[in-house]
Amino acid sequence: MSVLGLLSVLVPLLEAADTGGAVRVVLALAFHVTIPGIPLLLLTRLDSPVLLACVGGALSVALTIIGAQLMLWSDAWHPLALVVVFALVSLAALAADRWRARPSATPAGSVRDGLHRSGA
Image 1 (cartoon, helix red, strand yellow):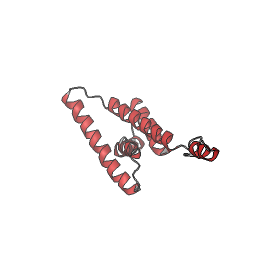
Image 2: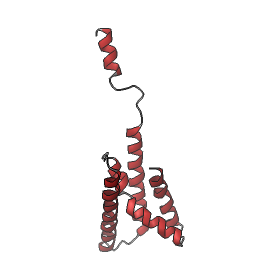
Image 3: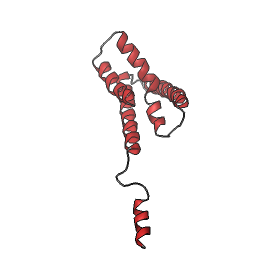
Image 4: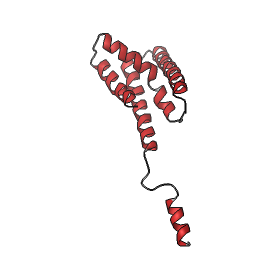
């Protein structure tokens, strides 16, 4: 999850700075194969990491293609905007998944068990 968050921050920054080189190409490929598909699928609580990687990768590539097609059809080609939108969606999904996975302050059923033991 940390790697996905790092990709979601690093790739838009590299693209905004208009850097070149092999590192940016590798990071951009990793970004478009994982973001936003895998973070969105983390919210579904898939049990299989292989299924998560395969379906998440396919979803990410499909969303990238759809986004590029929409930009071409509307004559509004701006790849940085698409990357920023995907990064924001990814960061929001990762934050929601992290928030949902955190342990609660009171264990489930503790209030009910306390009332039951007190005779209420």
